[in-house]
Image 1 (cartoon, helix red, strand yellow):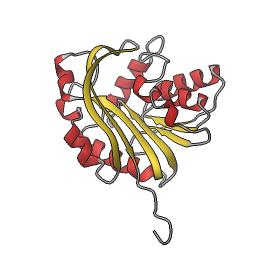
Image 2 (cartoon, rainbow, N blue to C red; image 1 turned 30 degrees about the vertical axis):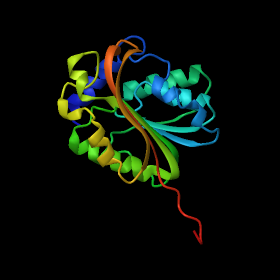
Image 3 (cartoon, rainbow, N blue to C red; image 1 turned 180 degrees about the vertical axis):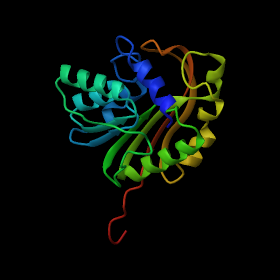
Image 4 (cartoon, one colour; image 1 turned 90 degrees about the horizontal axis):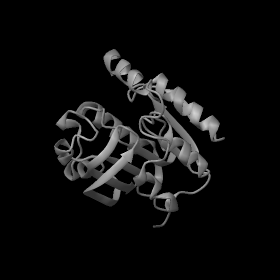
Length: 211
């Protein structure tokens, strides 16, 4: 990612308060019943920390990274205020180390800064980072979002379609893949009528000997 992009995110996260709010993403929170204390979780491009902190509060062991040191500092601050520990790193999608088969959960919430080349790299490494049986939770904006202008990428190529996600995660067992419209209220940046797409998928478990 370019230095110009880094400066843009630093400037956005440098605003007073938390621009996406401090509550977890609603889609992520709706899967609280699937989470287990002690799970190892990864939050991709976690920004100001609302989702990683919420997962840590559920008893998960959470790692998170973001390109912006300003965003990561705000994430560390909210984690300290809420009394949880999260392993934060400042890194780009390309620079983060992406351990293999390390996480029971990978959460990617509105990571649509990625152009198609970066997105392919990121999706491939998200799958690689999941343990067998691990869960992927991903939410983004669908193509109809261009009609609303209530958040999300300006470039149409960065939006997600069902076909794009089904192809990208063909190696996973897809449990939920749906486009829909709803009203978002996540800080000042995701606010108003929105066209969303959700993906819930699981990495196939390794068959036991004799199966």
